[in-house]
Length: 546
Ligand code: AMP
Image 1 (tube, rainbow, N blue to C red):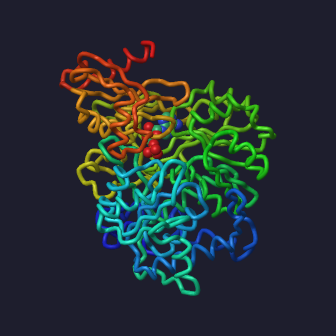
Image 2 (cartoon, rainbow, N blue to C red):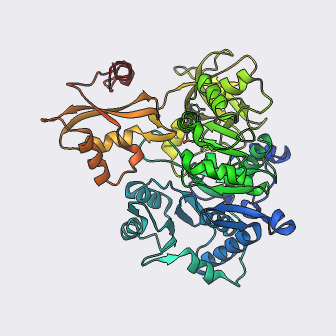
């Protein structure tokens, strides 16, 4: 395939890896040039009847998954979609999510992975920003019809030529129909393979999410390496309890890594213990991924797991987890916890099964790749700090992007001149070289692992007629890890929390961005630069009763 690192071959708006770094990653064997569209090939050739995916009553073999992906890929080409085209994909944990991704990887159409919670505000932006030609969406969820969303999005975004629906298509075209279009046709490999395979969304700070280009090379390396580190092979069973559109459940090793390794993927609709307990027991799940708030919930409800969990490893990360909570969860569940720090941007660090307990439960372990470079610098001066000190975490490596898609100004702030990503997190290394996340600089709320872009939410709330001024801050929360608090200076009679939530719903925002709490104040404290002083606000509010 085409090599990343040669600017002429990449999409406009994608920042390539520098040629020298790309050559080094190839020479070291990290990047192998194998595209993601072939992740099933080995198992289709050797054992096509092996079960690849379990979803409710469905048990789909490698052979069946491969055939449907091939037919869908050929169908997409019949519709006129070409390598390099973008498609916003918004599917919950359905087998057709995997079919869609593998099909698109094969023809070079680039999925932009939206979350099921996204609404017109986010989907509209993603369609416009990526200039997507297609939108692949599920028919409906309880209390929400995605086809209505699709109709609005298509009316507002003329680049969207094709809406393709998993399930009942309403007035659109179904995935089944596109599969039927492709049946019996050859998939034509892209003339000019595109190094980028798909886009993930950042939990970035300024406004709407940025698009993270992930390449075939870097993601395939991540799949291989994380599966190996977790001891996941053909005998492994991976449970997708989080949305698989999240990097954590998609590729660390997640659903794609499980397929590459020849294991079995079990798809769950949610991580709630009453849903996943029976699945873990029936399928003998060996690996799953959770955010800390769900680990705590599982531990609190350990009695609901009517099965021996000693063969289960739970990868936990995405938000802060105390060593005490990690230990008590292990004890309550009888499973093994592996902690990770990671970003959809690519960087990953995690504990290994043979780490001593204090490392395994009290740190985020070591970087995934020997080629990952992690630096701790002063927040004020950007200068490297002596080892052991806490500072801003900068990262560069074979899986970490060199620039967000089509975001030159943001990139100039988000990367150092020598290509290190400013993670926005505060961290330190233990004397033995294990990563400890100590806080963050970036202005987000990490709500049960979902990143709430504070600036965007403030931008909407300040338009509410009863709001004169507003600051959104994160407050500690037992269930969510952090909850979202809107501190409001009212204009006349004070608005209520339901007022604010209704207002955001009317503006079609994803509901994980809605505030959980409102606090009314006469004025916001200000820093010397005149910005809302969120440190003071957070300290005051975190200690006052709710
Ligand atoms: P995302 O963009 O959703 O992948 O989120 C990445 C961000 O999640 C990181 O930059 C951190 O702020 C946060 N995060 C991820 N893992 C951890 C962790 N183990 N502890 C604390 N925060 C984390």
